[in-house]
Amino acid sequence: MRRFLIAVVTTLAVLGAQAQTEKPVEVAGVKFETVETVGGQKLQLNGAGIRYKAIFKVYAAGLYLSAKTNTVEGVLAATGPKRLHIVALRDIDGNDLGKMFTKGIESNASRDEFIKSINGVLKISEMFATRKELKKGESFTVDFIPGTGTFVSVNGTVQGDPIKEPEFYGAFLHIWLGKNPPDAQLKDKLAGISPQRSNN
Image (cartoon, rainbow, N blue to C red; front, side):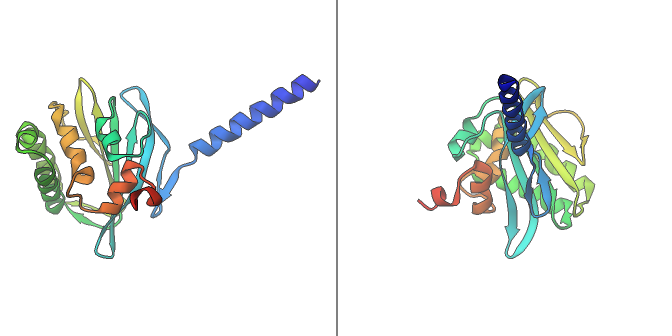
């Protein structure tokens, strides 16, 4: 009987721990699941935060990796599938979004990296320029699957063929994690850097 009770208590403890682990992380009212599946592999939410422009909240972003890290170098060196999920917190002009991607990659990548990624840069910029607008509450997801390429989804629907150049996803992540990010606090959040760590 005692062994049975111990087994029950242990099981409940494990289930309780799993429930805590699986509780979504909420950012500005947007819920990011702690685990997502990309390319048949479970990914962990590495970090999530808000992109501010002046005092205005523009979007919430969450980055998923196969294993959590707490440095920018760790994120950029991570292997396996990756996911960046962004939810608009206000209406965003499609042209502005496309220009942001182009400018962000160009200002954070080397000339060689930018040239190797140009096909993906043009494709994703054109995609959002054609869409006209990403309305408040709408989302887009950019997934990388090794050996296959980068997939862009808008509101859960994949847009066109994958971007096959493997260099593109790294250049794309540099928009937020490079030397000239649009929001330094968001950079730390996505990289999993704690406020105490980032102040050192």
